[in-house]
Length: 78
Picture (tube, rainbow, N blue to C red):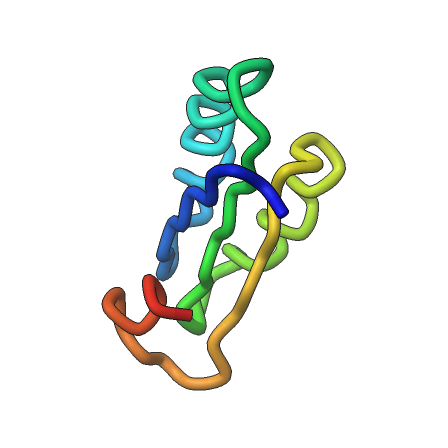
C-alpha cells in the first residue's frame, strides 16, 4: 500500500487529465511511494478513455468510475 494517495474527482475534464497527472507525478516521483486515484463521476465526454490511456504513462494511476453521478463529496469518499 502506498504511503500517500492523491484523490482527484473529475467530471467532463478530458483536457485537464494529463496536465494535472504530469504535475502530480513530477512533484512526487522519487520522494514518496504514492498513487494517484482519479474518480470519474460519470463523465459524458471521453474523460474515462483519456484516463485509461494515461495508465500506460503513469503507473501510479488508479481509475474508479461511479455508476451514477454522485458529486465531488462522494468521489472523495469512494
